[in-house]
Image 1: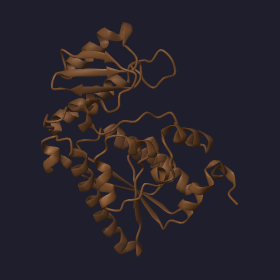
Image 2: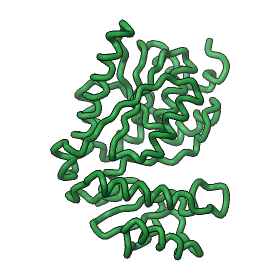
Image 3: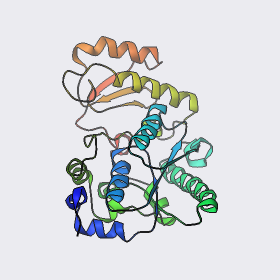
Length: 274
C-alpha cells in the first residue's frame, strides 16, 4: 500500500517509479524536474540530481536550483557545460536543441562514470520531460530517445496541468512555477549566440522580474520573454501599464532599445509558430 503524500500519486506512476534502479535526474530546478525528484523520493527511490551550469542558463536559476536541493536534502552534483561551441548551437539552427541535448547527455554521463568509480553502482539517467512536450517542437527529445534517457513523467502521460495538481496535493512548494527555458530560445533561428549577449539577456530579464506586481503573481508582466529577431521584442502576458516608463528604462539600460512590447496569451514556442 502507498501511504502519506505518495497516496495522491497515480498508482501506475508509483509502481513504475518503484521499479526503477537508483536514479540520476537532469535537474534544471524547474517544476518538472523538481516534481520528478520529489515524487521519486516519496516513492522511496534513490535520487541524485545533476545540474548543468552554462552561459545559456541564468545564474540566478542555477543558484535557486542549488538552494532548493539543499533545502530539501536532495543530493546534487553540479557541472559546467557550454553548448556554444557545438555546431548547430553556434549557428542557432532549428536543430540546436538536439545538438545541445546530445552534448549535455554526454557530459552528464561523464559525471556519472566518475561517480560510479566511488559509488560502485550504476544510475539510470532520467529527465523531466512531460507528456505535453511530446506534442510540441522539441528536437531534444530525439537526443533523449537515441541515448535511452528515461522520461518518467512523459511515460506516465503526465502533462503540465496534472503535474501542477499533483505537486500541490503532495506538498511540493511553488506548484504554480512558470517555465523558464534556456536563454538560447530567446534568439530567432539563425541569430548566432555568444556568452556576452546571453548574459545581457539574463540580466535584463532578472531586472524585469523584480518589478512590483499588482497582486500575488510572480511578475508585474505576468509570464514574459525578451526575444531578439534581431530587433528586440518583449513578449508579456500582462501589459506593463503605468510601469511602461520603468520597463523602457530597464530595456535601454541593458542595450535592448528601442523594443516592441507585445501582449500574448502565452509565451512558449514563439519562434516555432507557423
